[in-house]
Length: 134
Image 1 (cartoon, rainbow, N blue to C red):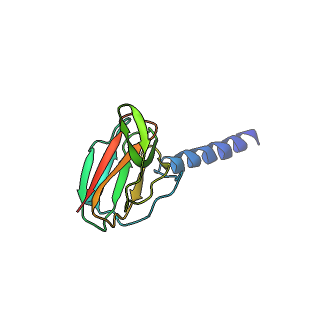
Image 2 (image 1 turned 135 degrees about the vertical axis):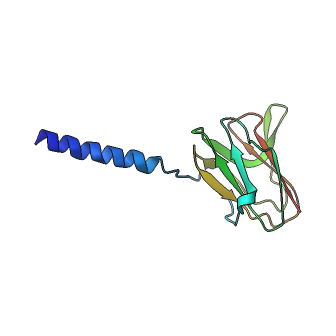
Image 3 (image 1 turned 90 degrees about the vertical axis):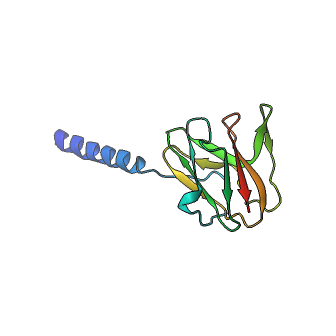
């Protein structure tokens, strides 16, 4: 009977690990859900946006993709001179404490107003993204 329980527990543990590695996302705050075309993907490494700016069309969104196991918490605003500055430009989708866990993705948008909008990671100093909407 002992071996049978061991195999049942081992199978359950392996199932949990496989499900956890499938790239789940969690949301720690709010954001508008919109369509983000594949051309609007912004990749993140451990401490930075790989691309620090993106130009998109009005009505489109972006998709943040983290390529490492490092989590990020994204919000409206930017890092300025080593200090986090929370700010939401008029017309920007609200992004407040959006958690993007390792090896996952999260859409942001749509951006329905033309302008320049800033996002930053609240836990990685200097991690800024500028979205230019035309």
